[in-house]
Length: 285
Image 1 (tube, rainbow, N blue to C red):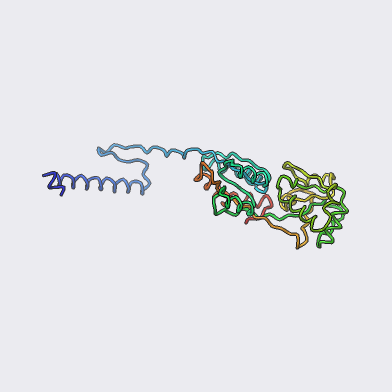
Image 2 (image 1 turned 90 degrees about the vertical axis):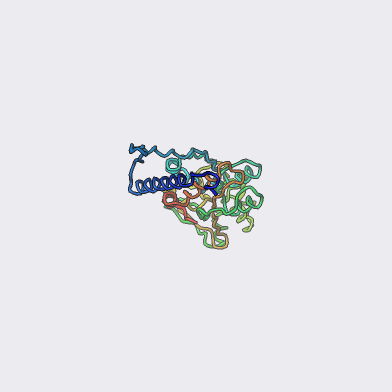
């Protein structure tokens, strides 16, 4: 058909196509051989231009406290490798839930699995959350003295009632360790008796450090937060009250940068993040 519409041109088109294929093969051989230049048709070198860096994106991250230190540890490495910038907010789980359900947009959301399931069911978080770490809860006591007994429900009850001050994360913020303790106190039937002895904290801080300084008898916190404090001893709950929380990372349904968000989540599952997780006494999920 080409020869019919362009008389005498068919052979010219065939020749040009063959010449282009030949040039492409020559260029491919140059690249595979590690050549740093391309050859123009007349034999002159065409210098390779350096690849443009990926366009910088701002990734809005909101995370519960469990991943606070890990994110801080790996932030510079991710930003250097990806050319993206992280805008990080770390608050209690209840605050994250409130803000996301109210419509605030985040690219990456890091929360306990139960909260992630709720946000997914309400269309606020994409499905397929990636598990990052597992956190156990317990009590902190100062090392060097008598170690209280928490091996049974009755022993835990006696230990709590013997304490003058117990530091907790304020349950009103949705902090998981504080919420869990209140459930334990209700089950033990001592919630009202313990209320005046509880020292709720609404902000981020190490309750275990305050116990070591002698400001309280006990503190209730995540295991990794207690074990990271020199001079503090971690006491697990009795088996019936033990609780492990898996924190997952997911892409916010309202994310403006879903591809960059997925890149950061993938980085959180990489070798550098794994080293930071181990260094912070956390357990990979």
